[in-house]
Image (cartoon, rainbow, N blue to C red; front, top):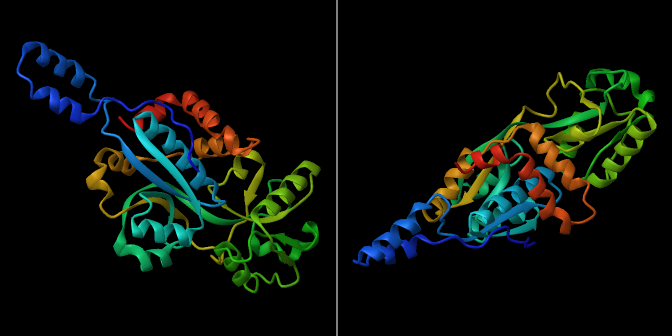
Length: 303
Protein backbone atom coordinates (compact mmCIF):
# COMPACT_ATOMS: atom_id res chain seq x y z
CA UNK A 1 0.00 0.00 0.00
CA UNK A 2 1.39 3.37 -1.02
CA UNK A 3 0.56 6.23 1.35
CA UNK A 4 0.65 9.96 0.61
CA UNK A 5 3.87 11.92 0.82
CA UNK A 6 4.50 14.42 3.58
CA UNK A 7 7.08 16.69 1.91
CA UNK A 8 8.67 17.35 -1.48
CA UNK A 9 12.11 16.11 -2.33
CA UNK A 10 14.80 18.31 -0.76
CA UNK A 11 17.82 19.77 -2.55
CA UNK A 12 20.09 16.89 -3.47
CA UNK A 13 23.72 16.44 -2.62
CA UNK A 14 24.40 16.01 -6.33
CA UNK A 15 23.18 19.55 -6.99
CA UNK A 16 25.62 20.81 -4.38
CA UNK A 17 28.48 19.05 -6.15
CA UNK A 18 27.57 20.66 -9.48
CA UNK A 19 27.53 24.07 -7.87
CA UNK A 20 30.85 23.42 -6.18
CA UNK A 21 32.44 22.92 -9.58
CA UNK A 22 31.72 26.55 -10.57
CA UNK A 23 34.45 29.15 -9.93
CA UNK A 24 32.69 32.50 -9.67
CA UNK A 25 32.13 34.14 -6.29
CA UNK A 26 28.43 34.34 -7.05
CA UNK A 27 28.32 30.62 -7.69
CA UNK A 28 30.37 29.99 -4.58
CA UNK A 29 27.82 31.96 -2.56
CA UNK A 30 25.06 29.92 -4.14
CA UNK A 31 26.85 26.71 -3.21
CA UNK A 32 27.21 27.84 0.37
CA UNK A 33 23.55 28.72 0.56
CA UNK A 34 22.53 25.36 -0.90
CA UNK A 35 24.71 23.39 1.48
CA UNK A 36 23.96 25.43 4.59
CA UNK A 37 20.77 23.45 5.05
CA UNK A 38 22.51 20.11 4.60
CA UNK A 39 20.80 18.65 7.65
CA UNK A 40 17.53 18.76 5.72
CA UNK A 41 18.98 18.09 2.26
CA UNK A 42 18.72 14.37 1.67
CA UNK A 43 19.78 12.30 -1.32
CA UNK A 44 16.35 10.68 -1.33
CA UNK A 45 15.65 7.39 -3.04
CA UNK A 46 13.04 4.64 -2.97
CA UNK A 47 12.67 2.50 0.15
CA UNK A 48 10.25 -0.40 0.58
CA UNK A 49 9.17 -1.72 3.98
CA UNK A 50 7.82 -5.23 4.36
CA UNK A 51 4.91 -5.18 6.82
CA UNK A 52 3.45 -8.28 8.48
CA UNK A 53 -0.29 -8.67 7.90
CA UNK A 54 -2.19 -8.35 11.17
CA UNK A 55 0.84 -7.55 13.33
CA UNK A 56 -0.09 -4.21 14.90
CA UNK A 57 3.42 -3.25 15.97
CA UNK A 58 4.67 -3.96 12.45
CA UNK A 59 2.01 -1.72 10.93
CA UNK A 60 2.45 1.09 13.48
CA UNK A 61 6.25 1.22 13.33
CA UNK A 62 6.28 1.06 9.53
CA UNK A 63 3.70 3.83 9.15
CA UNK A 64 5.67 5.98 11.58
CA UNK A 65 8.90 5.55 9.63
CA UNK A 66 7.13 6.06 6.32
CA UNK A 67 6.04 9.51 7.51
CA UNK A 68 9.45 10.36 8.94
CA UNK A 69 11.38 9.29 5.85
CA UNK A 70 9.01 10.89 3.37
CA UNK A 71 9.39 14.12 5.31
CA UNK A 72 13.12 13.74 4.68
CA UNK A 73 12.60 13.37 0.96
CA UNK A 74 12.50 9.59 0.50
CA UNK A 75 9.91 7.77 -1.60
CA UNK A 76 8.52 5.09 0.72
CA UNK A 77 6.29 2.13 -0.08
CA UNK A 78 4.71 -0.29 2.40
CA UNK A 79 4.14 -3.84 1.17
CA UNK A 80 1.87 -6.05 3.30
CA UNK A 81 2.45 -9.80 3.43
CA UNK A 82 2.69 -12.75 5.80
CA UNK A 83 6.05 -13.30 7.55
CA UNK A 84 7.24 -16.13 5.28
CA UNK A 85 6.65 -14.06 2.15
CA UNK A 86 8.18 -10.99 3.75
CA UNK A 87 11.40 -12.70 4.80
CA UNK A 88 11.79 -14.21 1.34
CA UNK A 89 11.28 -10.81 -0.32
CA UNK A 90 13.78 -9.18 2.04
CA UNK A 91 16.36 -11.87 1.25
CA UNK A 92 15.71 -11.45 -2.47
CA UNK A 93 16.23 -7.70 -2.22
CA UNK A 94 12.63 -6.86 -3.17
CA UNK A 95 12.07 -5.25 0.24
CA UNK A 96 14.57 -2.98 1.96
CA UNK A 97 13.50 -3.08 5.62
CA UNK A 98 11.35 -5.08 8.02
CA UNK A 99 10.73 -3.67 11.51
CA UNK A 100 9.10 -6.65 13.23
CA UNK A 101 11.60 -9.49 13.61
CA UNK A 102 11.08 -11.21 16.99
CA UNK A 103 14.16 -12.85 18.49
CA UNK A 104 15.52 -15.08 19.85
CA UNK A 105 12.49 -17.35 19.53
CA UNK A 106 9.53 -16.43 17.34
CA UNK A 107 11.34 -15.82 14.05
CA UNK A 108 14.42 -17.95 14.69
CA UNK A 109 13.51 -20.40 11.92
CA UNK A 110 13.46 -17.58 9.37
CA UNK A 111 16.89 -16.43 10.48
CA UNK A 112 18.17 -19.98 10.03
CA UNK A 113 16.81 -19.99 6.47
CA UNK A 114 17.55 -16.44 5.35
CA UNK A 115 20.18 -15.20 7.79
CA UNK A 116 22.98 -15.05 5.22
CA UNK A 117 20.92 -12.84 2.92
CA UNK A 118 19.60 -10.27 5.40
CA UNK A 119 21.28 -7.95 7.89
CA UNK A 120 20.44 -7.07 11.49
CA UNK A 121 19.98 -3.32 11.90
CA UNK A 122 19.02 -3.03 15.57
CA UNK A 123 16.50 -3.83 18.30
CA UNK A 124 13.85 -1.19 19.02
CA UNK A 125 11.62 -2.94 21.59
CA UNK A 126 13.09 -5.18 24.29
CA UNK A 127 10.13 -6.64 26.18
CA UNK A 128 8.10 -8.51 23.57
CA UNK A 129 6.38 -11.62 24.87
CA UNK A 130 3.75 -14.23 24.15
CA UNK A 131 1.07 -14.03 26.83
CA UNK A 132 -2.16 -15.40 28.23
CA UNK A 133 -4.16 -12.47 29.57
CA UNK A 134 -7.27 -11.98 31.68
CA UNK A 135 -9.30 -9.01 32.85
CA UNK A 136 -7.41 -7.21 35.63
CA UNK A 137 -10.03 -8.02 38.27
CA UNK A 138 -10.08 -11.75 37.47
CA UNK A 139 -9.78 -14.02 40.54
CA UNK A 140 -6.46 -15.59 39.48
CA UNK A 141 -2.94 -14.36 38.69
CA UNK A 142 -1.27 -17.50 37.34
CA UNK A 143 -1.79 -20.17 34.72
CA UNK A 144 -1.20 -22.64 37.54
CA UNK A 145 -4.53 -21.56 39.07
CA UNK A 146 -6.58 -21.54 35.87
CA UNK A 147 -7.73 -25.18 35.87
CA UNK A 148 -9.15 -24.91 39.39
CA UNK A 149 -11.03 -21.76 38.41
CA UNK A 150 -12.06 -22.74 34.89
CA UNK A 151 -15.76 -22.25 35.61
CA UNK A 152 -15.06 -18.56 36.38
CA UNK A 153 -14.14 -18.23 32.68
CA UNK A 154 -16.91 -20.45 31.26
CA UNK A 155 -14.27 -23.17 30.71
CA UNK A 156 -12.98 -21.26 27.66
CA UNK A 157 -9.61 -19.96 26.47
CA UNK A 158 -10.08 -17.67 23.50
CA UNK A 159 -7.21 -17.94 21.04
CA UNK A 160 -6.18 -16.54 17.68
CA UNK A 161 -5.30 -18.23 14.36
CA UNK A 162 -4.80 -22.04 14.52
CA UNK A 163 -1.43 -21.84 12.75
CA UNK A 164 0.09 -19.10 14.92
CA UNK A 165 3.18 -19.76 17.00
CA UNK A 166 1.32 -18.46 20.04
CA UNK A 167 -1.43 -21.01 19.45
CA UNK A 168 1.09 -23.83 19.24
CA UNK A 169 2.77 -22.70 22.47
CA UNK A 170 -0.53 -22.69 24.35
CA UNK A 171 -1.60 -26.03 22.88
CA UNK A 172 1.68 -27.60 23.92
CA UNK A 173 1.32 -26.14 27.42
CA UNK A 174 -2.24 -27.29 28.08
CA UNK A 175 -1.14 -30.63 29.64
CA UNK A 176 1.48 -28.83 31.73
CA UNK A 177 -1.20 -26.86 33.56
CA UNK A 178 -3.93 -29.51 33.41
CA UNK A 179 -6.17 -27.47 31.14
CA UNK A 180 -7.48 -30.35 29.06
CA UNK A 181 -10.99 -29.74 30.44
CA UNK A 182 -11.16 -26.24 28.99
CA UNK A 183 -12.19 -25.42 25.42
CA UNK A 184 -9.34 -23.79 23.53
CA UNK A 185 -11.12 -21.80 20.84
CA UNK A 186 -9.07 -20.73 17.82
CA UNK A 187 -10.30 -18.72 14.84
CA UNK A 188 -8.67 -15.34 14.25
CA UNK A 189 -7.12 -12.38 16.02
CA UNK A 190 -10.08 -10.08 15.18
CA UNK A 191 -12.50 -12.65 16.59
CA UNK A 192 -10.47 -12.91 19.81
CA UNK A 193 -10.37 -9.13 20.17
CA UNK A 194 -14.12 -8.89 19.58
CA UNK A 195 -14.72 -11.35 22.43
CA UNK A 196 -12.28 -9.47 24.65
CA UNK A 197 -14.03 -6.19 23.91
CA UNK A 198 -17.45 -7.67 24.65
CA UNK A 199 -16.34 -9.26 27.93
CA UNK A 200 -14.67 -6.08 29.13
CA UNK A 201 -17.76 -4.01 28.29
CA UNK A 202 -20.00 -6.47 30.17
CA UNK A 203 -17.69 -6.85 33.18
CA UNK A 204 -17.20 -10.57 32.58
CA UNK A 205 -14.12 -12.73 33.15
CA UNK A 206 -12.24 -13.85 30.04
CA UNK A 207 -8.99 -15.64 29.15
CA UNK A 208 -7.34 -14.77 25.84
CA UNK A 209 -4.05 -15.55 24.16
CA UNK A 210 -2.21 -12.33 23.40
CA UNK A 211 1.24 -10.84 22.99
CA UNK A 212 3.16 -7.73 23.94
CA UNK A 213 3.40 -5.19 22.45
CA UNK A 214 -0.27 -4.97 21.51
CA UNK A 215 -2.69 -2.06 21.58
CA UNK A 216 -5.12 -4.05 23.75
CA UNK A 217 -2.89 -3.36 26.76
CA UNK A 218 -3.52 0.34 26.31
CA UNK A 219 -7.21 -0.04 25.55
CA UNK A 220 -8.35 -2.46 28.26
CA UNK A 221 -7.65 -3.08 31.94
CA UNK A 222 -6.07 -6.51 31.56
CA UNK A 223 -3.20 -8.44 33.13
CA UNK A 224 -0.95 -11.30 32.08
CA UNK A 225 -1.18 -14.60 33.92
CA UNK A 226 2.11 -15.74 35.38
CA UNK A 227 3.69 -18.66 33.56
CA UNK A 228 5.79 -20.47 36.18
CA UNK A 229 6.46 -23.43 33.88
CA UNK A 230 7.62 -21.20 31.03
CA UNK A 231 5.38 -22.67 28.31
CA UNK A 232 5.28 -19.31 26.50
CA UNK A 233 9.02 -18.80 26.39
CA UNK A 234 11.13 -15.90 27.55
CA UNK A 235 10.73 -12.24 26.72
CA UNK A 236 11.97 -11.33 23.25
CA UNK A 237 13.25 -8.25 21.47
CA UNK A 238 11.87 -6.80 18.25
CA UNK A 239 14.51 -6.04 15.62
CA UNK A 240 14.69 -4.20 12.35
CA UNK A 241 16.38 -6.16 9.56
CA UNK A 242 17.44 -4.99 6.11
CA UNK A 243 18.38 -6.57 2.84
CA UNK A 244 22.12 -7.02 2.42
CA UNK A 245 23.76 -3.87 1.09
CA UNK A 246 21.09 -1.46 2.33
CA UNK A 247 23.49 0.32 4.71
CA UNK A 248 25.89 1.04 1.86
CA UNK A 249 23.17 2.71 -0.20
CA UNK A 250 21.23 4.42 2.60
CA UNK A 251 23.77 5.10 5.33
CA UNK A 252 21.74 7.82 7.05
CA UNK A 253 18.53 5.80 7.12
CA UNK A 254 20.36 2.74 8.35
CA UNK A 255 21.90 4.79 11.17
CA UNK A 256 18.52 6.19 12.16
CA UNK A 257 16.90 2.77 12.17
CA UNK A 258 19.78 1.28 14.15
CA UNK A 259 19.30 3.88 16.89
CA UNK A 260 15.51 3.63 16.96
CA UNK A 261 13.81 2.64 20.22
CA UNK A 262 10.18 3.09 21.25
CA UNK A 263 8.66 2.84 24.72
CA UNK A 264 5.49 0.78 25.14
CA UNK A 265 3.31 3.76 26.09
CA UNK A 266 4.15 5.53 22.82
CA UNK A 267 3.65 2.37 20.77
CA UNK A 268 0.29 1.58 22.38
CA UNK A 269 -0.84 5.17 21.87
CA UNK A 270 -0.09 5.02 18.16
CA UNK A 271 -1.63 1.55 17.80
CA UNK A 272 -4.79 2.66 19.58
CA UNK A 273 -5.14 5.69 17.32
CA UNK A 274 -4.73 3.54 14.21
CA UNK A 275 -7.14 0.92 15.55
CA UNK A 276 -9.79 3.60 16.00
CA UNK A 277 -9.58 4.60 12.32
CA UNK A 278 -12.56 3.86 10.12
CA UNK A 279 -10.20 2.88 7.30
CA UNK A 280 -6.62 2.93 6.07
CA UNK A 281 -7.23 6.23 4.28
CA UNK A 282 -7.15 7.89 7.70
CA UNK A 283 -3.72 6.52 8.61
CA UNK A 284 -1.61 9.39 7.23
CA UNK A 285 -3.55 12.01 9.18
CA UNK A 286 -3.47 9.89 12.34
CA UNK A 287 0.29 9.39 12.09
CA UNK A 288 0.81 13.09 11.39
CA UNK A 289 -1.17 13.98 14.52
CA UNK A 290 0.80 11.46 16.58
CA UNK A 291 4.07 12.96 15.32
CA UNK A 292 2.89 16.48 16.14
CA UNK A 293 1.97 15.37 19.67
CA UNK A 294 5.40 13.77 20.14
CA UNK A 295 7.51 16.07 17.96
CA UNK A 296 10.56 16.29 20.22
CA UNK A 297 10.87 12.51 20.43
CA UNK A 298 10.28 12.06 16.69
CA UNK A 299 12.91 14.71 15.88
CA UNK A 300 15.40 12.86 18.08
CA UNK A 301 15.09 9.74 15.89
CA UNK A 302 16.91 11.44 13.02
CA UNK A 303 19.10 13.86 14.98
